[in-house]
Length: 180
Image (cartoon, rainbow, N blue to C red; front, top):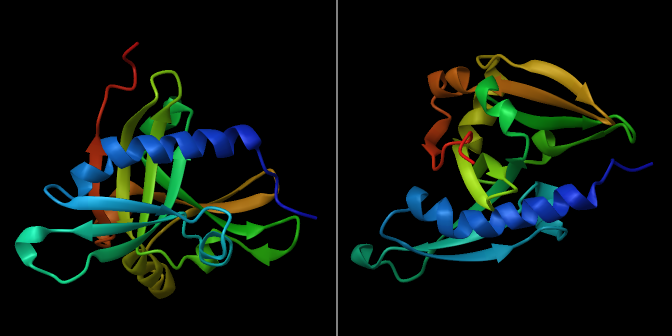
């Protein structure tokens, strides 16, 4: 038995990822040259929850090669959830009884954002340092709510709690979610 898979959500996530390359990531790494490697459906994604890798070059630093960031992206499409002020990470596959994203996270960064399907635009997002997130969970210093949806359980972390444990690197609002 496998996890529920929505082709529509996958396609929309791919659109959000492509939009983020020009709308979101340049704001995260201002003044840097960026290149992207999509790793969805490859071993990096399936085994380590890494959706893409970003090569970041800053000529002013005179490094001999780009710095690489492994990224787990989570795009939501229901803009009404922005006001919840939380980030969710799947924890367990209830259908198979196996660990999910939280226990596989090998990414450096977790990008959690909202994408407006109608406008083809990233509306807002947060960037979380995965090491700090996992460290705070391991120490029991980060509160969460466990919830189930379909065949997955997931943990919801408030942005306030993530900031308090030092896991939030940056939050960005790129557009008004209520604009037509």
